[in-house]
Length: 173
Image (tube, rainbow, N blue to C red; front, side, top):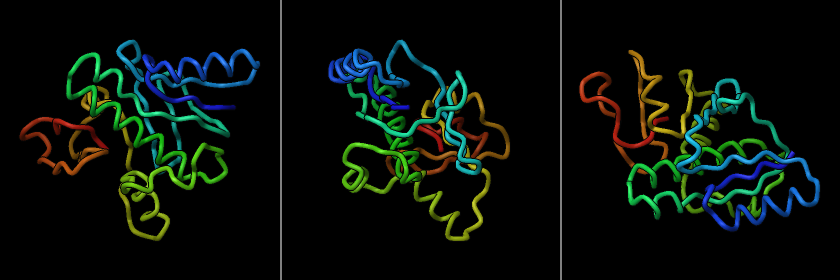
C-alpha cells in the first residue's frame, strides 16, 4: 500500500494521486487541509500510527509538506500544523527502514526529527514515559490531562507548566 501525504490544495499531490489511481495502484491519501482536520496520532510506545479512521499501514510513501493551507489562510496555526504533520510522517517513515520512500537518504537530514530522536533514545535504553504525538494542536488540546508534558513537535518552544497557562501555543508531542 502506498501512502500519499501532502496538502489537499497541492496541485502536485492531486496530480500524483490521479496518476496512482489511473494505474490502479493501492494507496491511502492523508491530505492535510482546511477540509481535513482528522487527528493524526503516532504512539511511539506501541508503534501505532492512526487517524480517526483507524490504523494506517503502508509499505511505501510519497510525502510533501502542506504549505498551501497557510498560504491561503495566513493563519500561523495552519503553518505550524503543516510542519507538525510533516515532521510526524517523516519520523514514522524513518523509524521503519522497510518502508520505501523517495529520497530516503536525504529526508530529514537538515534537522533533528524530535519524534524519531525520542524513539532512538528509547531503543538505546533510556527510560521514556508513554508518549503519544499529535499533529493537530486542537486535537492535542482535547487530550491534555494532568499530569501531562507537552512540547512543540517542531521548533524550539519551551514546555509550559501544565494547567497554569493552558496549552502551548504551538504543537504538542
